[in-house]
Amino acid sequence: MTPIPHPWPTLLEQLLQGRSLTADQATELMRGWLAQAIDPVLTGALLAALRAKGVSGEELAAMAAVLRQACPLPVERPAMALVDTCGTGGDGADSFNISTAVAFVAASCGAAVAKHGNRSASGRVGSADVLEALGLPLQVDAAQVVAALPRVGLTFLFAPAWHPALVALAPLRRSLGVRTVFNLLGPLVNPLGPEAQVVGVARVELLDPMADALARLGLRRAVVVHGEGGLDEASLGGCSQLRLVEQGRVRSELLDPTALGLTAAPIAALAGGDLDCNRAILEAVLKGQGTAAQRDVVALNTALVLWAAGQVASPAAGLPLALAALERGAGWAKLEQLRTALASAPADLASAPADLAIAPANLASAPAG
Image 1 (cartoon, rainbow, N blue to C red):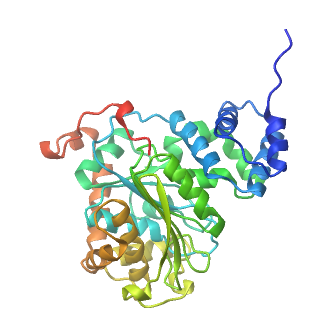
Image 2: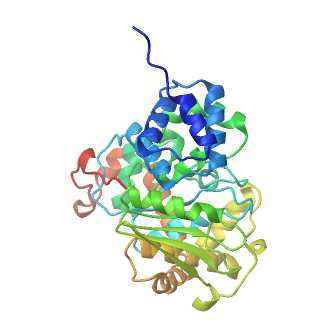
Image 3: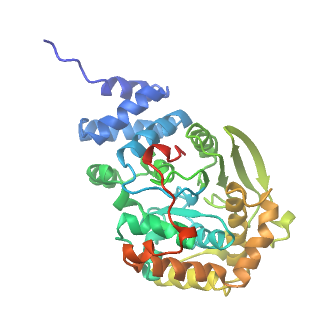
């Protein structure tokens, strides 16, 4: 019997011609990568061709769906509406950990935040790096990570611990030395399947495909943001471009910080540094002791999260809530609560009050988005 030839060279030729993959083709390609069925040289060529063509929302959504299936949640999911906040990185701004600060401030305002993060990718210090420096344990039992949600209203998922299927691809991705589709997929594969999300993108051409992918993945609400100056956050330096996803529909808006009463500030005012510097900035901001620009950029991005999470009717309505939370240091209190929760034994978490206990659920009922 003649073996059926693999379709990988055909897919490469299609990408080199500038033609996007169908959902079925993207699904097959991701499954081939996860099964290590594609030669490393060909994999490098496929990743480069996909980057050169420009990824589509259909490709992103199909690949993300495969990755989600490859990392089933090992514990019961809380019956809570969750939101995640992160950027794709790659802006080269070396800003402090804005989206990490936003996660804690948004949680202090009532949003249930499942923050999915990793070590440094584009900047010098990733969310996992800075949180570890602040005493948050990263290698934590999955049950503890999930059980912190109903107790604290917030948890942190260290991405490598939840995506073992991607370990085999890590050496190749590092050897390529350039950003690939996997950098864009990271924000789309939170194992807890949040219903809402804010994703920052460093390039304006990524706004529409990322929004399309989030809509296809079934998120109730999402925001894709590209800040003035190429920031993968809402910026204080000018209008940020938004794509607002709601019930499968996408609309475009501009977010002008000065129209909301905030003072314009250059990207340089948001600069971070090494690990010690970023740790100190994050602590100061969460305690209400950051600079005006640091406070305002966190508040602005928190307002987007509060809208996505359904806490407010508009981002503008979320801004005073975020500013008040920052003023009273509520974000730092949340960090201390999460640090305590993740350091506790699972039995300790299980003893939380009955009204905060994890509701029965099964993996099939976990939201697709």
